[in-house]
Image 1 (tube, rainbow, N blue to C red):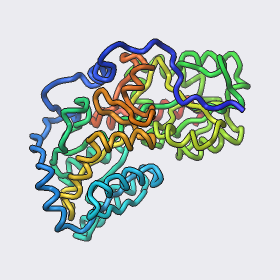
Image 2 (image 1 turned 60 degrees about the vertical axis):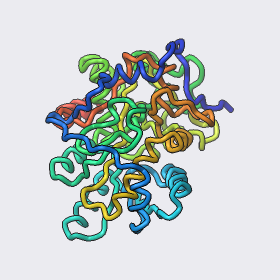
Image 3 (image 1 turned 120 degrees about the horizontal axis):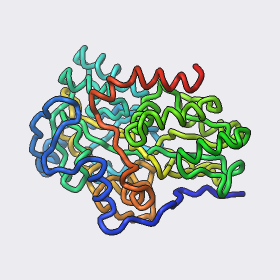
Image 4 (image 1 turned 135 degrees about the horizontal axis):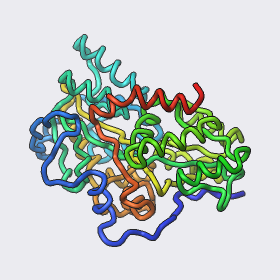
Length: 378
């Protein structure tokens, strides 16, 4: 049985300052915090001292989080936070991207107890929440140790800049049959279509759309649509990434593109049946975002959780469970590879791009989705 390779190295590692060099390339490093929402960024608040938050949190009543991340992935992070602050009991509800916001907005409108923190990959809904003053303008401690793109403006932060993955059935594809770029994938599908039944996210999935938007930014629309026209007729789409992986394990597909970065946490559970890697000609970073709500009943506890995320202990846990750690010059204590430092040693800086919380992402969605559906024959 072939064991999956967690990451395939296609190029020589970049020299010194690996993470910083790549992150500057994708985020236009600057000492000035700017918004990617298409309007001036609200003045960032000064981080509240941890000792002050600790004192305030002792008079609060837990911590409520609504998020799209699978509970089994979030739980180690919640457990680590509880060990650091044992008097705070986090309650996590796993919801769809849409449910994260609709549930909070409904409860907020009724002045009912609701989420202190929202976690989602939906850029349009975070933009709308910011415009409707539903998010708190708080600043976590420790952001100076992270790339500039971590701050997306108006209280929205990149929790995990998950790289788009390429996955494959390790029984059906091995060695040189595993493509290392989108260019190679398109060529292989044209040459041997019977060997490459494919899967991907559907155009309706926020992660799938973000992946395609990022790919177009890196490679250009003409190139990307040319690839999709080749791949589309051989592709079965899924709204849920896990459903696609299970379909691949069962032999329904030999490979999958536009995969979630969380595959890094899930694929090892398939014990050698699947492999994953990153395409060297284009690896967009599709952000999982986090923000504190304006009406948080437990604001100090919420800020402590943000501080924990952007600390080395929090980053170590995130990397270990497959959520991309993004601390500058991150060094894994466990050997985990879900971090931007490791990614930078495998994918050229010019091929990496973080999809921002910007109005352009929203404005382009209708046209890009329609063109994608055309490639898929829908």
